[in-house]
Every structure is written in C-alpha cells, then in structure tokens.
Length: 316
Image 1 (spheres, rainbow, N blue to C red):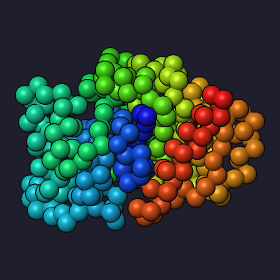
Image 2: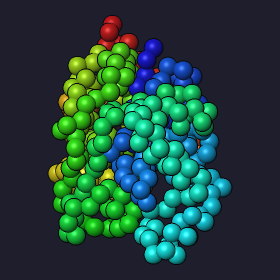
Image 3: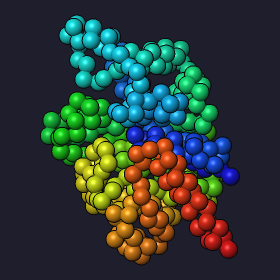
Image 4: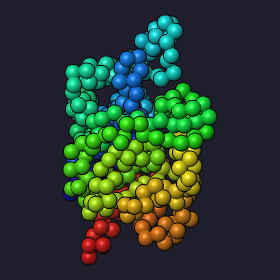
C-alpha cells in the first residue's frame, strides 16, 4: 500500500502527525509546500517544510504551531538593536536550521537532499518529498501592492484584502522525480486540511503534479480546512474569496473538482453533504478539529480507512 499526503501549513503538519501515529505510518510519504520559502537576514527559510520536520520530530512549539519548542531569541534581539527588520520571528535554534540549509544551498545541494538531512537530524522517519527543487514563491496582491506570502501572513497579519495570488517562478519549475513517482504509484492520496489556494494550490501549480494526480488510479480524498464555514487558522477564507470560491465545503470541492473522489467535512458542515454527493463524490462527516494527538490520529485513520473502503467498493 502507498499513501501520499499533500501538506502545507499547520493543518498539513497536524495531518502528517496523525498519519505518523496511525497504522498507516510505514506506508505514507508526504509532499510538502515550498512556495512559502523566502530569504531573511541572508538565510533561506522554508517555513512549511520546517513545520513538518519539527512536528514529526516532536520539536514544534505546540502553542504557536510553528517554530521550535524551548526557543530563545537573543540573535533576533541583537539584530533589532542593529535596526534590522525582525517581524519574521526566527528563534536561535530555528536559525541553526536556516544557516545549515543556506550553507548547503550554496554548495549546490538540492532542496530535496537538504530536507532529508534535516529530517534525519530530528529523527523523522516518514519521508518528506518536495514537489520541486526549484524556487517557487507565492505572492499576494493587496491594496499595498504585491507582497511575498510571509509579508502578507506574518508582517501584515493577513489583515489586507487579497486581490490576486501568483506562484512566482512556477512556470519554469520542474517536478521532482520522487514526487511524480510517489503520485503515480499511490493507492490513496490524502489532501490535508491546508489552505487550498496557497498551500495545496502551490503544490498543484508545479507543472506535472496535478496532471499526475489526475492520471493516477489513486483514490483522492481531501479534508476540508473549514469548520462551520470558518477557517481554524490562517487566511483560507480570504484566499477562497479572491479565487471566486465560496467559503464553505463547496468552495473546497471547487478547488479540487478535477480529481477528487471524496471529501471529509466537519459535523458542523454536514448540511453540505447532500450537495457534495450530488456532484458525484463521497462524503465523510466526522469531527475534524485536531486539538490533540488522539484527534489527529483518529481523523487521519478514519480518512484513509474510508478511502480504502470506497476504493474496494468501486473496484467490486
């Protein structure tokens, strides 16, 4: 059995933890989002990939949902004293990761290889694949002009209206062979409850990735990031609106309509189930808030088991 998780942001990391603690762990590989990457203080930072690694390695700051636990911020304080912009909060332990990544990048080591080395450092056994080793960066058009995703998300606290979104550099990006191979041979592809526009959307935008999913015989099941028609965390609502999608389960479905077989929605959104099923997909209604390890494990176990059952029934 081969299971693929498409993951970005905190929702993606929580889903990854759920699979890592389930009976499906040894069958799973993750494809993570790299389009949030950016340079700070001369260092290359890969927030979503690091959040995956820190979460799976039990090094994440659980209260924040990102960054290292037991952090200190002496370097950032010193940079602030020098008059540097420090709105991107990078702790001292976290900076070691970025220094190591940047050093290897300058030596010509691929982003995929760097990710493997960082995962090994933190004892992460679940493989983390990248959709591309090329630089792709999400940009958000706002009333203040075009901003990097981190400027919009961290510096502006997602407060600005979203006029447009682009994935800069994606048209020249090449998918990694490992990601394509994983998709082609997958039995089940799980789309994490991540932002469908800037987390999952950025993965799908890499040439060849969405096409591989559409051509795959895998059963594709998504987990909605909305609960009661609202985002748990992050700007998914603004992003959906900017893309002309409704801020509900129907909007999530619209993002994946060309390849999705089933959608997992929260009990508070069960009124959307009939409409979704009328579109020809299956629906699993279950609590989707992942507050504890048990929540994550239960949700992801239910998701994969539902996909396998539907796949078996379809084959029969």
